[in-house]
Image 1 (cartoon, rainbow, N blue to C red):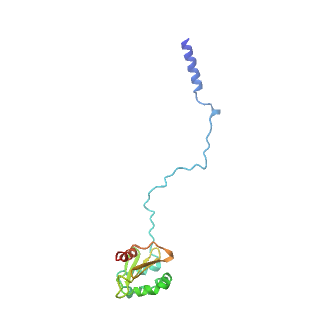
Image 2 (cartoon, one colour):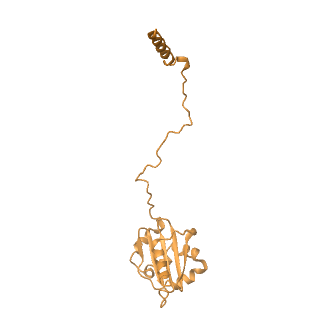
Image 3 (spheres, rainbow, N blue to C red):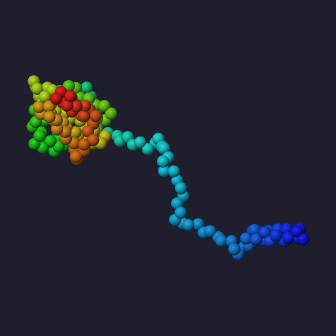
Length: 173
């Protein structure tokens, strides 16, 4: 009899644990809103954008190593009119302080030059930086070692050379 119980129990378990019938299977319909997981942190090397020089500044590359007075830097288009717009009433102070100048530096699309008021270098100076790729002009004026910086369109991402120029006045205080 013991064998009979075991056999009956085995049959009941097999029927109970058997595969589901066709009518009891639930079909899953894919959800159209389900997003396929993607890795958004894929590192690529071809996405860096290096802007080229703006056409109006291309001629300024030739000024590297030349003196501002010799190439008439401040009289060149488009610098002349835009410099007036940036400086406004401060243009006169800039011009007074941009008299004695070293050669112009052009490096990595940035033109930089500085000047000083005759007999007042290290105290009263002026500097100009042009980011020829971003098409932005930056100016600095030092009045008795107090520096004021200007950037076109309110741009305050000053080029490194202009910031270094400004720092020499901070060190001397």
